[in-house]
Image (cartoon, rainbow, N blue to C red; front, side, top):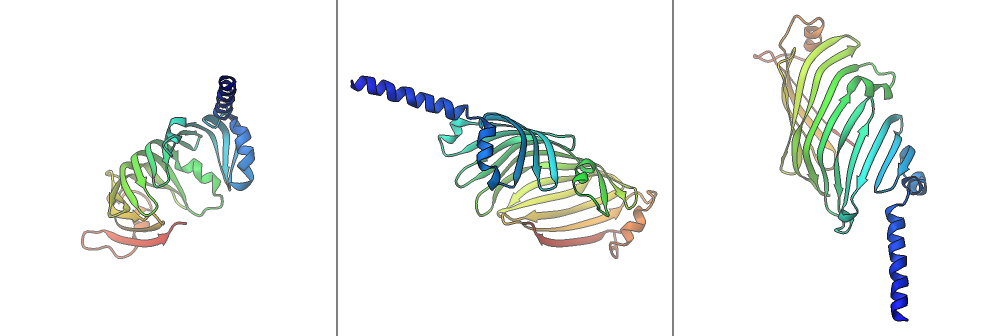
Length: 248
C-alpha cells in the first residue's frame, strides 16, 4: 500500500510540475496586471517562454517582446531571463539575472531610433535624430552600489532637427566602474562637434556630468551660433558645461 501512495504522490508531483512549467503567460499576467504599471497586449506562450505583441508604459508603447526564463536558475534562488524587444523604434535584447543580492544586465545589444522613440513625447521644443547603438557586456549592481560595468553606447548621425536642422556628428559613451559608481567616458568621433567629458551615476540615481564642447566644423549652418550661447569659450575654444540631478 505504501508503494501505491508513493506512486500516486509521484504522479501528482509530476502533474504539478508540468502545470507550472506550461502555465500560460496570459493567465499569470491577468493575475498581476492590476498591480503593475506595465500593460501587455497579445500575450502568448508560457511564463518560461513567452511573447507579447505590445508593451505599454504610460505614454510609451512598444511592439513585440519575447522572453526566456530559466527554471534551472530558480533552483539557485536566481531568475535568469533572456529577453528580446523588436519594435520599429527599439530593437534590443540581452540577459537579465535577478537574485536576492545582485542585479546583472549582460550581453545587451541593439539599437534605438531616436527620432522614432520621440513620437511618444509629443509637443517637444527640441527634436533630436540619429541611431543609438548599444553594446553592453555587463552591468552588475547590488543594493548599495555598482559592482562592475563594461560596454559602449554610440550616438551615430546625431543631429538636431528642431527648432533648427543642425548635424552634430557621431558620439561615443564608454561604460566604466569605479568606487561603486557607474562612470561614463564621453567623446566624439571626429564630427562637427568636439566632445570630451565624464558622467557618473550612483545606485540611487544621483547623476552628474562635466563636458567640454567645441565646434570643429564652423561651416555647418547655425552650429557656431548655438555654441556661442553655451557660454564663454576658454583659450582652446572649448566651453565647459556641468550639472547634477537625481533620476527617480
